[in-house]
Image (cartoon, rainbow, N blue to C red; front, side):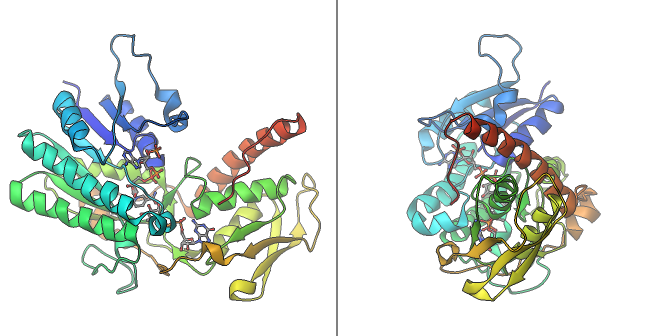
Length: 371
Ligand code: NDP
Ligand code: GDR
């Protein structure tokens, strides 16, 4: 019998990689997608199957984390062996603008999934993975952060995810549901949303090298993150649900890097060496050397400045996870290093931006949004 999985947030970065992963494992994969006025399935279009063919193994359903009736009906119809609850308003900065919605989708949305499983009597059948986050640690209490480090959330997003974390633990203890939190540290890829800092940097670096953009504006360059590759992290989501016992797990690389160094690494991938000058809001970066004759970029050109609009009302300064439990108990280790991640993202964005250059030269409009 094929295993059946339901992925909420199937159109997101992790949803796309997890769908690929589970389809390779011969799962029947059902994804929850929101209705949108534009197509929002770019990341999973290569997996799409015409609804008219027989023997399909990839199915999309309209739904929303704020709609209990929809979630209950879908779970009843699909009868999933595994639910991966990845859907969320996942942007930390945006959560300060939409705190109530974030609480509803990210916090109560998780309760809706757990309670649907309970109401439908699926407690013994359906295993649930909850997409928890290193943002729970927030203000530094301990370094590196482990499964026992106290939480101190610093944004409406993190507070909503803290509710989701504990309601997952509570439903496990109260009703015996196999429900686990994966406390995942930042993970990136060529499919990362364009407004998260890594992707914003790799897109801008490519555009600046190609002469399509003048400058990159960022916020806090001193923030440190433990960055891994999303492909490694979705593998662990699946491993978590195959373990003998339902538990909570930290998934991280154990290394941390500043935003500034991520910028430096991205520019180095196109042969551009940067020099950073100034501090805080006045910090800027200039081209010191360009080792690639393909790019006509002037030495001394200012390519990066700080804009306070990207500062958060409360910031998470330092994240570094200790993945020892995942390594020792499940044998998980990340296979893709940070330089390889930057390489992967830069290769992909350079290709995309060369397409933009071609379109622009042909007089067509290209995406011009850099928030
Ligand atoms: P993305 O932002 O790329 O994807 C989020 C997904 O959730 C999208 O499919 C989005 O749909 C969907 N979604 C948002 N709101 C709703 C809603 N109300 N109802 C239904 N679907 C909704 O996130 P990632 O793939 O990066 O992350 C996956 C999960 O893991 C998220 O819960 C995130 O908070 C969490 N996480 C992510 C980490 C990371 O570094 N990437 C680290 C730790 C946790 P649409 O495409 O229509 O917008
Ligand atoms: P984060 O990711 O908040 O860690 O949440 P993001 O990439 O948005 O920010 C990382 C750090 O970079 C700093 N920063 C900027 N961030 C953005 N987005 N844009 C900027 O211009 C900029 N300049 C500096 C931020 O201040 C921050 O310190 C991600 C999301 O995927 C969450 O859903 C997930 O839970 C956590 O990772 C783990």
